Image (cartoon, rainbow, N blue to C red; front, side):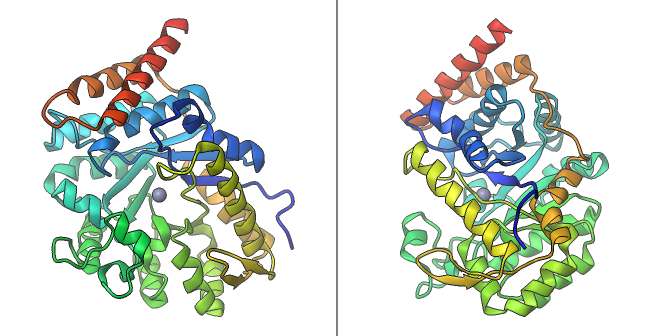
Amino acid sequence: MGMENIPVIDSHIHIRGYHDLKNTLAVAQNISEKCSLAGVNVLALSAWDADSAGQNVLCMACKALYPETYAYANFDYFYEGVDKTAMGRLEQLKAFMAMGFDGVKLIETKPSSRKFVGIGLDDESYELCFDYMEKEQIPIIWHVADPEENWDAELCGEYAKEHGWYYGDGTFLSKEELYQETFRVLDRHPGLKVTFAHMLFLTKDIRRAAEVMEKYPNVRLDITPGCELYFNFDADYEGWRNFLLRYQDRIVFGTDNGWGDEPSPAEKVESGSKIIRMLKEYFSTENIVEAWDGKEIKGMNLPKEALERIFAGNFMELQKGKKSKPINLAQAVSYGKNVLERTKGERAIGNDARKQLEELVEMLSAMEGNG
Ligand SMILES: [Zn+2]
């Protein structure tokens, strides 16, 4: 078994890096060409931190340059005057969809973002949006929690600590509290088309993962690393292989490629392509595959039908079989100008982020002028 003739869509890519805009915007496209992908989806992370205020604009710029790119919007928080009322949130959501976004990304329930944002997604102020997304069947990719090790001072890795992802100091919500916020939303809106990122960080608890899948039949899970996810798969190989087969219509391929301010865009294309090659081999053969940190894991050797669903079919179903939506440049420009203007106040973002936002708005305006 191999991956010949099986289309691959990377449903989970980010755009980040402040020093080389042109090549940063091209990372997803370059990986796509290098790996002959059938599609890529870039996810905005504007709830990440103040410097991420331009994330939705970045994703729109990516779509403007590479119109086949899918893009998901994230709610705004970190500039002056964001209307956080229920009506305000609904207007923002509708504006994002009219601008050309294909879905919604939620990073608010990553513990660090949850701390910055200060309120849960189960708050009243998001209710109209969830109603709307449920009714319109707008696809959502939702990051909830993080690996359990990150709450444990002994087990949390150095990399995570350096990035502010150690959550055991009492200032972050617990993993369980984040799940409860999330399930409250799902209980109110069981029809939401949600894909939980990184297997919902439940790969140490296969029973609970199955319970979630049974209780919420519209929920999907993405297999975006979190490399711990793959090591957990490996620790219960048969169990997870059966899980993937059983829920093959609800498992979605993604990589998190493009993330981070380092290394250079060219290196990101290299390492990102390598991850795609590795994951293709992992799912389609029973080879012993070298994964991360030199660790080896045994390939899942899934049948062709499952591979077709997981690597592209399930994502396309979420998009109702449609190509990426065309960008409305005029609306994207006006949104970008608005964000730029509002970052001038006391919530000022860092210099690099601000310079990038200026560059983005200029670029989009020029494209609009030429259109
Ligand atoms: Zn991600």
